[in-house]
Length: 175
Image 1 (cartoon, one colour):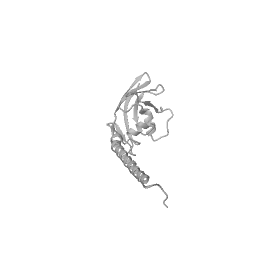
Image 2: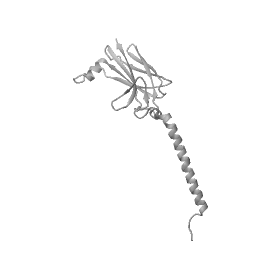
Image 3: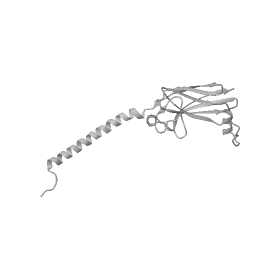
Image 4: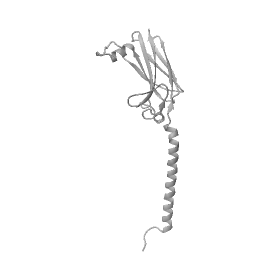
């Protein structure tokens, strides 16, 4: 006495499984063809800004062709701060601290402000960075890579760990 499915339904199950596997292979093959063109090509990105003073209020206005929602970090350093940080002695508490913050790119533009009233006259350096792996929305990380490996352009810099970031800077004199 035989126990089990009749031969015809078993044959249909086998054929159905083969068809499903073939379809899965086609879908995965299509994804493999699409994904490299979507996610592996490098994207050239640029950024520019202008720093102006309104009295002792620093205004930073810039543009970029990065996607909207990209988070840009900015740092403002007084020349005394730079000397103090890089100097041989202990930190001098009379030296101005760094100023920093973040700006979100919206419609290709960004803006930031920093109050420099407490700073003495001197040279000031402003640095704006797009760091693809720090605090970015998931779509931005997917586009540029976990370490910025798909980020390219004239102002893209690679650090010692092969992480890539877009960085521009400028200087002005604080009267």
